[in-house]
Amino acid sequence: MNDHRRIIVFDTTLRDGEQSPGASMNQAEKLRVATQLETLGVDVIEAGFPAASPGDYEAVKAIADTLKKCQVAALCRAAKNDILRGWDAIKNAAHPRIHTFIATSELHMKYKLQMEPADVLKQAVESVRLAKTLTDNVEFSAEDGSRSDPDFLCTVFESVIEAGATTINLPDTVGYAIPEEFGNLVKYVMENTSNIDQAILSVHCHNDLGLATANTLAAVKNGARQVEVTVNGIGERAGNTSMEEVVMTLNTRPNFFPQTTGIDTTKIYPLSRLVSMITGILVQPNRAIVGANAFAHEAGIHQDGVLKNPMTYEIMKPETVGISTNSLVLGKHSGRHALKAHIQEMGYELSEDEVNLVFKKFKTLADKKKRIQDEDIEALINEGVLRSSEVFTLEYIHVLSGNTVFPTASVQLMINGRPVQGSLEGTGPIDAVYNVISKLTDTKSELLRFTISALTEGTDAQGEVTVRLKEDGIVALGKGSDSDIITASALAYINGLNRLEYLKAHPPKEERLV
Ligand code: KIV
Ligand code: ZN
Image 1 (cartoon, rainbow, N blue to C red):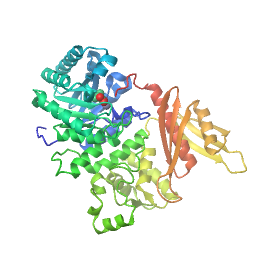
Image 2: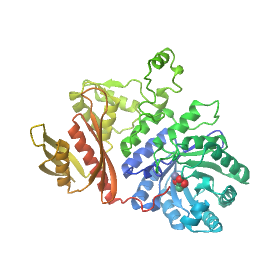
Image 3: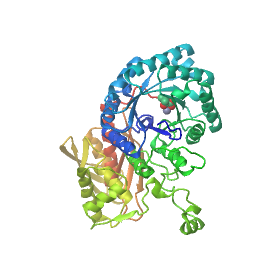
């Protein structure tokens, strides 16, 4: 890692990314994302904030115990108990890292911490010293660094490096910085922190003004060697710097950026889809790199140019980020082997049992739909594999609906393996189904949002439903897909209820970080 042109990619999808409203993931989901991040080639995974809740601790520990190549970081406030708890979660990791932080801006020190700068400095140094007794790999972050006094920032960085920090991180916590200004601040820190050669300078930007990627790249241009990012740019408020934007900018513009990363770019798109499926946070169609329209050419003159030479309008090839250009794929007569090969080509790593589960669902869908496309297969993976440990599952659903009858639904669910059934009316078929499910599960969630869309073109397309539910102040997203939109709606509702159950058993963090 001593090559100054090699940028260290620190992924915080599982920590800062998980702070996106409604994005909480369960332990199995976090482990799946962590494993794919390792395959993608990120250098460090920030797995969570162990002191925040027992659920966070367990998830961080499971990731630390499993991963072999990646460094696994635990976030801890600059306080003894946080650091000891964080270390306990990651101590068995192949490459553990303690990441401790305290705010250094006047605003945060005066109003949030109610501490004098000298005391903040002392606490930062003591925390790094304590962390250093546990591991050699210690990162220190100066929260709200971009709004801190530059000289105080350099003093803090110099002192924590002296205390043993091997990475110092400069966050633009509230997404306030402007690229030129942030680049200059990084340069200032590089030039005015006397022992900076003994540490790696990192940056962590938020996207409140839509400038997170630009700020991160300005920092790289001025000497930052670690970038903190999330998949799809998810994160608190407007999110964090997006991994795919930074990696693909470095990759696409080597004449401007001599820096490289260890990322296998062909795994970017599958991971983007996975994170979107697991968190329920949709990727906007015009999003750079991973949006549905990122490589779609609509204007005739563009299409003509691309056909003659793709370089006319395409600065990257879709295959470079793992988007399969051959999206019409399988049908009724395709076998398990072909499906398995295609799933792998799409970038998913499933066990044999998981492939069997998806294959079973694939056969059922292929009886109803002639052309099975990548979007269909993804939905089958989501329905068949990514829904482990569910309390409620759907057995059957029968609906009577039309313009001259009262919509009525009969539903059978399994609740912890026990069958229950019931029938009720509603203002429409979905309302009737939701009324029965709510009664059977004895839940009283409020439906905050309901969206439905077609996964592919054609009237035989699968419908995909996303719901946002709220119960007892807890918000969860649910997703479901099926060729029958009433069934898709039921699956989304049940998925949301399962997520609420999980969140009730693993209360969200008492501490929300920025
Ligand atoms: O945005 C921020 O300042 C953070 C720190 C904890 C690194 O997330
Ligand atoms: Zn942050």
